[in-house]
Length: 152
Image (cartoon, rainbow, N blue to C red; front, side, top):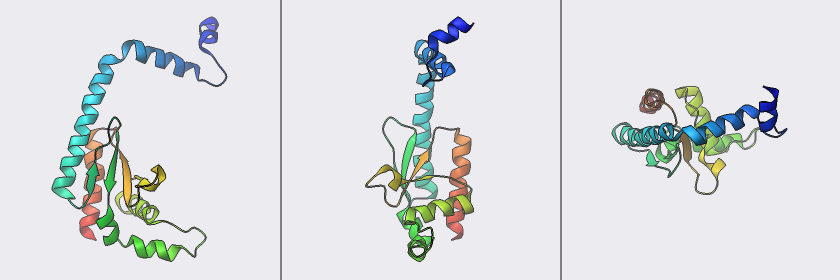
């Protein structure tokens, strides 16, 4: 057993990770094909959900990833992020508009999205959503956001 571990062991790489990667490359094609089909379906689900329930959110399907761009500009205005961000500028922890909105999503909707500005220019007023999960969880997150936005 120790000899097998030593063959795959390096101080900077997890041994089990090396074995898992090897197995995935050698035997994971069917799983990968199913995964890609499912994620593409998740993109379609989110896009359709937003069209029907939150049309003010602009959806951008990312290519080759399970991360989606959601432009929340109108909704951010509705929840007052501009004023809240401005009011925070003289505090010990000043926040951007998207940081204020990120906190609003967590506190009011129970949903954690990543602020778009973390990913560079063009991410202003955008949030990045990881859709690499079950459609049941995606629907729950989107329902929570939709319900809270409608109550504003």
